[in-house]
Length: 218
Image 1 (cartoon, helix red, strand yellow):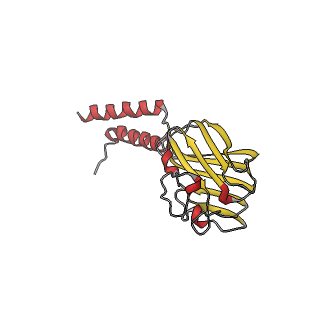
Image 2: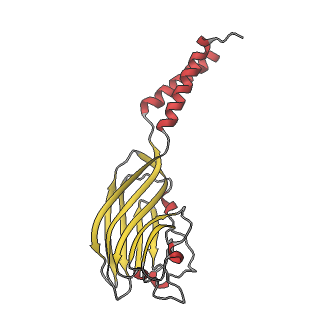
Image 3: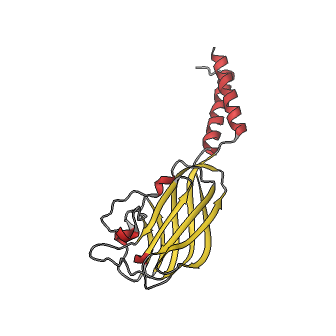
């Protein structure tokens, strides 16, 4: 059987362009770490806010995770969330707090990654004391910290950022809402996975090739 390579050339070119488009348009990941070393005021709803500006080629978020490192204090006093655009996720809401343990967890050091895909809810997975590291689901309890319990419904996940443009300001808020201890936020990291904007020239070439192939077939 004889292959007409001349006739196949437009299709070969088109295939190469499609493969190039897919490579350029594949998901990518950005991680930024921010050092703040700031103490959280004890028993104060004012708390601390840290706003960072993100600039990336990613234009649509597919996944977000947050790493946070804190020392001292009492984890069961802490309420923390992150915002960007219309997105809002509760990272910690008095973890460990329940009807049996109304003061929450006495863990004094945290170095954790919070991701929706993790296996364990940090609110129920945090130990009663000591230190904690590893990967956990965010608390996600969007409720007044005075009423946050292990049984509280969870609605404010990091998936609230999915589909948003990551560029612009991201704000981490942390408050200590009970008296007795002071915690320091050492640093936090923002990891964003998503799809970058395709190159305009590549899309133009792809469109032109599709037009030429259609004309040849007609």
